[in-house]
Amino acid sequence: MKSKNKKKWLATAAALAAVAAMAGTFAWFQSKDEVKNEFEGSIAGNDIEIVEDFEKPTTWEPNVETKKDVAVKNSGKYNAFIRVNLAEEITKLKSENLDGKYTSNGADIAAADYVMPLSMKKADIESKYPTVSTLEGTAPKITIKGKEYTLVVREKSETVDKGTRYQYLSYWDNGTEGEELYARTGGFVRKNDKLTPKNTPQVKYIKIEYQAPVKKDWTNPVYTPVTAGTPGGPIKGDGSASIVLKGAADDKIEIKFVNVSEKPVTGKWNYNLKDGSFYYIGVVPAQEQTAQLIESVKLSGAAGNEYSKVKYNLDVKAKGIQAHAEAVDSADWLGEKGPNNINGDISKALKELPETNKTK
Image (cartoon, rainbow, N blue to C red; front, top):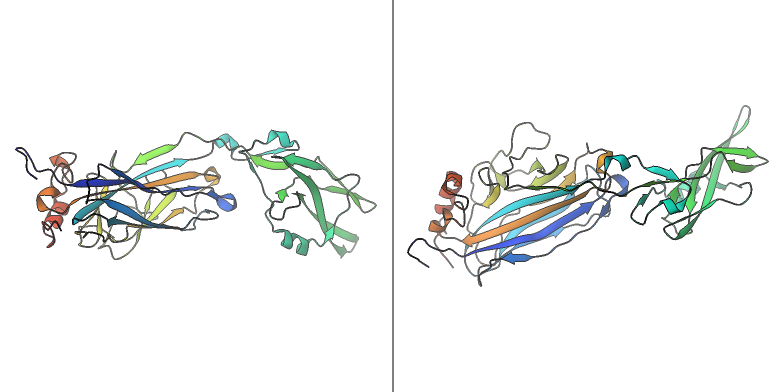
């Protein structure tokens, strides 16, 4: 449609179509996933949506990839150009809480606090420490978050030159398999085949108190991505291979991209260093989708204790515009932030696509 000053192009955005919210580190990671679709400024018949395949991890451990396939679908009735913006948020524990605390008083532990579990499965414990030890007097108990735990000690022995040598393993047990907790006792005194803990038995817990979140939008300020494990970069090649980029919010977050090319290549994504957006170099017909952009997210194997119980959000935002040559450099697309931000290579590649100018 024409006005006296300019053409107005059909544009629509899928904002925060998929948020992968992952929390945790090491063996005690927790995870949760929230997926929603919000459409901003949508015009009937020209909508887009993010298509995501996200495998919710039961534990999110360093150096383990979490599948997060992301592509964009043109769910409207017009051919469209599509781009994607990324925003991240990471929240880490306060540094003073990282080493954890010990207590023999369950009242010290708040509902949100993390209590250290036993590192071995119960079946393995019983196999390696076959005998239940006898304690002197009543076994110590502790109540944590409304559940009562009893100290259990198991032992194994071997004959040595000077008699018998015993090894012990102790833990807190509430009767539910899988909920055993680590116990610190300082060792045991053995007398008449009965054990007395050297110290008052304790549990270890970590106060779950977070720092202020760090938020980074790849478009403001424009992020120059760094290839994980490779100096220089950011993006090389023709898009035929995958590439891992460090997150903008934290360099221990690694995002694996596919189909991303250094120069505009038809059927691939091109990252515009002038506005911080990934542009799909192709016309996406109605009810079809782009090539995949993201494959997985990983916490670097170099992540330390400061990433315990980390919370991380990857916000994927997609926007589409009617696939017309005159729309490419409009204020709604490459010229959105002014003519000085127009990427000539992307502009040329989109205008020269044979399907450009066809609106259906």
